Image (tube, rainbow, N blue to C red; front, top):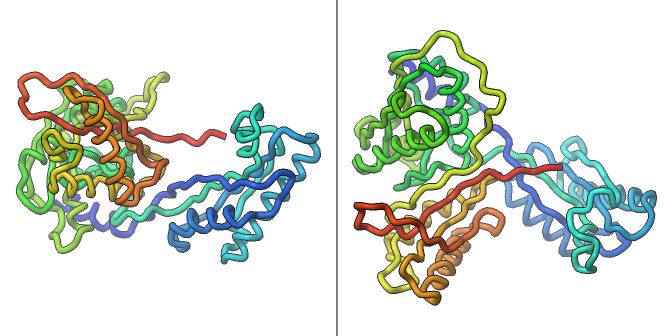
Length: 379
């Protein structure tokens, strides 16, 4: 318990790691002046993040293919300066703004069509900011001792309410945990799942099994892992507000055995980039395109996490097995509308129809699944 209390104080006082938000603003042909729509885009995207949480902003200027290399390089530099001047006028310090310009050398869109060519007359904006996550920690799994006989909370591994879906910022934790099992190939452990609020023991078991399954599917032997669920019988903190409920939606690792020396990771070791899981308790009304009220509530909990997400895309998969085309489309559109109403944006989620192989021996249909995958910014 002392180790858990120590972790609690580290959690409260630790620094957040930076997240990113990316978007583009566009310019008229042969022009470096910010249009009204470009200024509105800068305002809506940047000031959706509290200014106190913004660390720095990168600005990259570009042009289309028309004109000489020399002229376009100079024009892209002027476009960058226009964005800088505007942001300084809105209260940012010059030291917070970093920039580069590339002329026409790095087109993102084809220059073969007028409409697409216009999109190359752009500045790309990347905002680095601290995430709005209560009790987020910069502690990593590699910082834990992982001594046999000890229990450890997996730092930053939290779950959406009533789901086995990890919060968007928890994606990297799963990869870090997998790293630990590869670095200690003799390590064995139990995973203890927990819930907040009511004593939903099956959900706590499913959360522990989710971590177990992630590791097994990605190269860790089953014999080294044991999942267990404890409902809400072992709360980490007393729940008086939502942030404390979030902390109790967790999984702990109980280390059973481990060798003294860590091994190197294999040369071909790669991070897992996507995870799939069913959505719990989100059901459509039989023969209808709408959700039951309880399903809308459950979807809202997921939507709130998606709306805050950075660097992770959520693909919501609608099970259309046995449905006609019209009902299938109604259900896809319903999920899209609901998520948009919760503040989720186009670049954060998508909704597709799937026909999964139904699990044998289970009579209850699963209407929705979610696939989470990492987004990468390559320059």
